[in-house]
Every structure is written in C-alpha cells, then in structure tokens.
Length: 429
Image 1 (cartoon, one colour):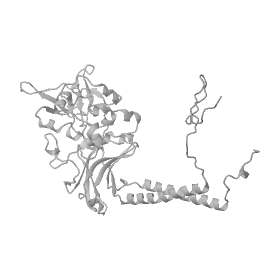
Image 2: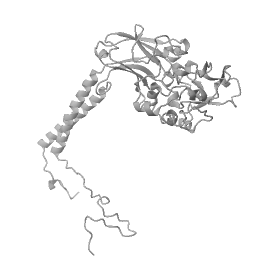
Image 3: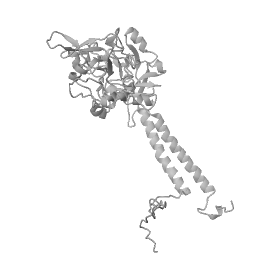
Image 4: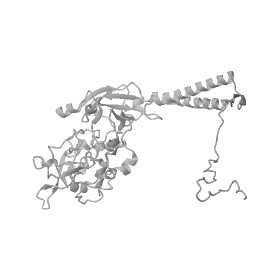
C-alpha cells in the first residue's frame, strides 16, 4: 500500500487513539531553537547591560528632578477633634527654594497607608450599573417604587438602612432607605477637605463659586470642597459615572447630602422645585457604613401652593456621582499604601522658598485601622512622579548582566570548550 505524501494529513483509522499526522499534532511546526554558545550568551548579557544601565541612569536623573513635599497630618489633625470643636486644622509648611515650583504644574495628592482597598469583598461591593445610571432611569422623572436588583452587587454592605425619620416609632414596620450610591467603596470615601493658602489668599486649582450657593455655609472666597475638575480619567467622566437631574431627585431622593459631602445638584439649593430641611439624626462620618449619611430631607410643593410636604422617594442620594473626587476614589488601589490625585495647581501659583498654610477639615478617621494619611505636593517628569526604585532596578539588572558577561568571558578564555566534543559524553554511567 503506497504511503501518503509527507505534506498530506493522514486520518487516523476509525476507533484509533493515534493523533492525526499533522504538523501541529505531531509538534513539527517551525520553531527557533537557538544554540546557546558562549559567544551568543556573552553578547546577549553585554547588550542587555549596555541598554539597561543608561535607561536606569536617565530615570534616576528624571526622578531626582521631581520636586516633592510630603505633609503627614494624621497625628496632628484628628477626625474626632474636628467633630468636637468644628474647627479646621492648619499646618504651615515651606517649599524648597527651587524655581521648579513656579515654572511647573504641581499635583496635590492625598496618601493613605494601611488601607486595603484591594480586599476582595471590598472591591466587589459596588454597583456599576447604578453608578452609570443604566438601571436607575435617570433620563426620566418617573417615580421609582422599588429598589433595582443592582443593589445586590453591593454585597449587602451600605446598601440600605431604616429611615431615620422613624426614630421613636416602630422600626419593625419602618420603611427602608436605599443608598445611592451603595457599597463599601462608596461609603468609605475619603472626605477630608484640603485647602492651600498664602496669607489668607487661596491657591488656584480648586473650583470656585460654591460659596454663593444658598445653604452652602462657606465663607466668602472659600473654594469648593468637592466637585473637582481635571483629576479623573476621561473615560470615567464620559461614560462610567452619571448623576440624575433635579426632576428625578425631587421625586426619588428622600434625603440628599450637604455641600461639604458632594451634594447631587447645586440647583436643589435654589429652592425653586424642592424644599430642603436639615435632618438632625443623620450621621456624616465614613465610619458608619450602614447608617445614613444624609443632611437634608426633600420636600415637594403642594398642588395648591400652600406649602411643602415630604416626598416618598426611596433613595438617600448622599453624594454626587459626577464629582471627580468620587470617581478617583472609586478606582481602587492595588496596594495598601497609595496616593490619589486631589487637585492640580497650575504653574505660576506656587513659589520656591515661600511659606503656605495647609488647611484641613479632618473627617476621615485612620486610627481604627492603624493607618496614616498625608498630603503630597509634587511636580512630574517624563516618567511621572518621583520613583527612585525604578531607575535603581534598571541599573542593578544592567550591572548584573555586565558582571555575568565578564564572568562567562573569563571562563571561556581561561578554559575554552570545543562545541559538540563527544569526549565529554560518558555512556558508561
């Protein structure tokens, strides 16, 4: 029986377990199988060292050029102290005498240590379709009578609580209020307020105009504590986070947060469509993951115009989802010590050698988890922020490769071996 050509594929007999005679099944595909000769290995190590060492030196020089100041305030300012006194914490600091502070943009970060945003249950406790508005019908002004199933994505953490307006009544029959947004990630948001000023004049980089809104409680000239611009990813701003308008809020939000907590819509404070009445029994601290973090009860005008009545919404709309500070926080960090972008100060605002005041309204407690927090001011270079490790790692790897190349070269010159010499084979073993 004539055999099949080598290029053809022979089918296995019926019932046979023999693999098909193909180049793939028989592992005959073309492959590069280099022979690691001494010259080849020495050349590779030399080339890697010659490339890595200059790159590492360039990275180290760029990192050295980055200006940075870290101001730790977890021990100086404490959240419980602010809750008792209501007074902000002021920390003076002086920048290094370098013109780079004036000629470059300066980025303001907050840094947390020992905060595990990468915990599996923490990461999963969020409702993506709630954040994007896909399951909230936010494009309409209809009344939502029951919570959507996406609340289950929050893993039963900070998703609902008993209506605080039922205090002193029968809690067994009290209605539930659903957090919007829900979940541990949202409920534990970093909510310290941070300002930088020099002689009472605030540094640019913070959004302005909130001090003129009714009910803001902000002193004239005070920048907005929330609703930053230019700190979140464009994809988050355009697609992943959407907030409803006044019409939806007036019918579906039983409670809303205050300005200092990132309220939903500034138009609410105009008092044209709704009336907001302060709520005395709502908590504002991030440590209470299950309780409300509301500030005002929403009231709607009566049909006859004689006054306002509380609405029947089922949500506590405690934070503005389009607040870029919120978007930055919702991108969880991979390590327990991390920095998140807070503000961007344009060039020309800071001056080297000058003294400034860091004003902090401390709301975020770090003592319960043994952590610490800091404010970081930093310029950037072509590699980003200050990173001494990356350049050191490149130089170290390059140096090791050069050292190995020298060792192999000396060994090859002192005791050369003939390639493929059968004298080194011992068939008796």
